[in-house]
Amino acid sequence: MQIHLQKNPTAANRLRIVKIQEVKRESPTVKTFTFHDKLCGKAEPGQFVMIWIPGVDEIPMSLSNISSKGLASISAADVGEATKALNQRKRGDVLGVRGPYGNGFTLTGGNALIVGGGTGLVPLMPLTERIVGIATKITFLLGAKTKDELLFLGRIEQMLSKVNAEIIATTEDGSYGLKGIVTGQAEKMLGKKRFDMVYTCGPEQMMHRMFVLAERYDTPLQASLERIMRCAIGLCGSCVIGRFRVCKDGPVLTSEQLRMVKEEFGKFKLDFQGKKTPIS
Ligand SMILES: Cc1cc2nc3c(=O)[nH]c(=O)nc-3n(C[C@H](O)[C@H](O)[C@H](O)COP(=O)(O)OP(=O)(O)OC[C@H]3O[C@@H](n4cnc5c(N)ncnc54)[C@H](O)[C@@H]3O)c2cc1C
Ligand code: FES
Image 1 (tube, rainbow, N blue to C red):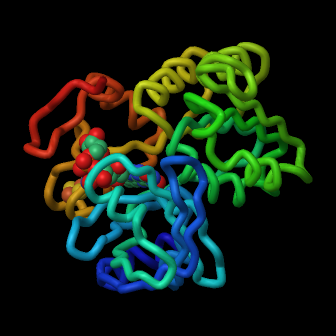
Image 2 (image 1 turned 135 degrees about the vertical axis):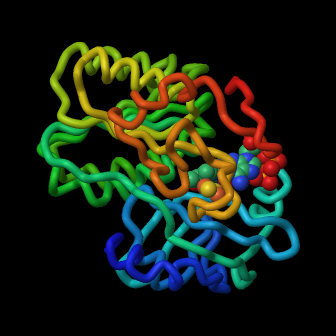
């Protein structure tokens, strides 16, 4: 399907106006918006869309749900001007959609370790849906600061209820699951068992730690990166990391690609002015 989109990029680049079919609150700061869009319904897990909030801005969002019936969802945290405006939108309101864009996750069989933190869990939802039936075992580690901010736990439990799987939730304040950070559990897991692939998305420091751990245990990894995005089609350069443009070469980069940008990954990104700034 991804190949089809690349053959006909103009279809994906065309801005479509969609009506919000459903709004669901996931946490105090995150809401899921569902809409009909044929192209999004054909997206690969890990691909993203550009969402235009009329009169405000256009921002990149991963797809949190991809349905073959043409329904798709985004799940947005309220962090600034555009996401605040988005979070105020109601059922029946309209949004603009371009995409899906970029390279998503490459699905592999075997023993899979999925590690997500905060809104990084968003692209891991369609990934998990697809990987059930391919992987022989799935270990899902999810983390958040507090219980209230832990996203999609019920959905993950449901998706993995009928397969060989283990789910471990961590919260930094210990209000749910194990107290601590998710990478601490990942380190324990990688030390105990052999995994065939690590899939990760979350704050960049978290993904960087996962990259270091995966390298230590000689395990391939795929991480979904975030950068400032404007064009989403590889032209403007605002999403550059080393030799890669995250919108086109990513957002999912492999350990092999991350090794090529290790001076920047987890350390620097371009700000809105295109200046290299440290990642806090
Ligand atoms: C591929 C990709 C997928 C994403 N998926 C999700 C998702 O599923 N859910 C979610 O809540 N967020 C996601 N984001 C982040 C989301 O795009 C930003 O939070 C949003 O653009 C912030 O806009 P704002 O006007 O609300 O905030 P601002 O006040 O503009 O900025 C708040 C923060 O967001 C960052 N940011 C602002 N604009 C962008 C931009 N165009 N691209 C990347 N970062 C930006 C800023 O550096 C700042 O740290 C994704 C980003 C990328 C690149
Ligand atoms: S967003 Fe313009 S090159 Fe990536």
